[in-house]
Image (cartoon, helix red, strand yellow):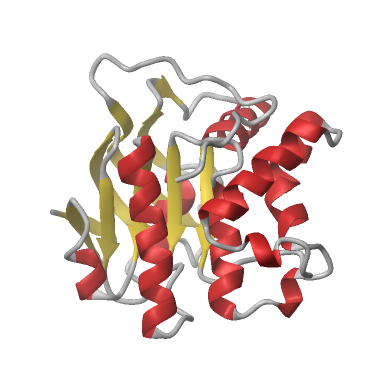
Length: 243
C-alpha cells in the first residue's frame, strides 16, 4: 500500500484504554414518536465494537440494519439508550458537535456510491477534506491521489465518476470514505449492486485497509461468504441484535 499523507484538518482521536470504538447500551429507535403510527424499529441493542475489528452485520430486509448503522454513524439519534463513540457519550451532544465528530472520524460507504458524477474520481475523494477545511490545497490533492493509487485507479483519477464502471465507482467511494483517515468506516451493503468479482475486490480493499491501518469496519451485507471472512458477525432480526 502506498504511503498516504494525513488528511488536512483531521481530528486525532486519543487512544482508548479499553480499545472500544463504539458501544451501544439499550439503544432503541422509534419513528413517528407520539403519533398513532409510532413504530419502534430497534428494541434495545447492546453492541461493542473494538479497535481494528472487521464486523459483519447481517439480517433480513427491514430488520433494522440500516437504522442501526445510521445511529452508529451519528446520522440519527436513538430514542432511548446510550451510544458511546471514541469514548464520548454522544446522546447529549448538540448537532454541531455530532457533525464534527462524524465528519472527521467516521467514513461511509453506501450501496449506491453517492459520487458526484460530474466531478472526477480525484475530486470526489477530495470532497470530505474540502468540507472540513473549506478550501483546496496541494496536500489534499496529494492525499486523494495516494488513496486513488491504493484502490488501483490512478489511470482513471481524472475521469468523470459518471464514466466509471460500477466496481470502479465503488472503489472511488472506498477511497473517499478513507479521505479523513477515519478510525471507523461504516459500509452499508457496498457490494450489493456489484457482480461477484467487483464485490470481492471492494470487500478486499476494505479488509486490506482494516488490517494494514487498523481501521475499524462495520460491514452490512446479505452475502454469507463475505460475512464469513469478517472477524465476527452480528445478526439483526426484528430490531434485536445477537452474535
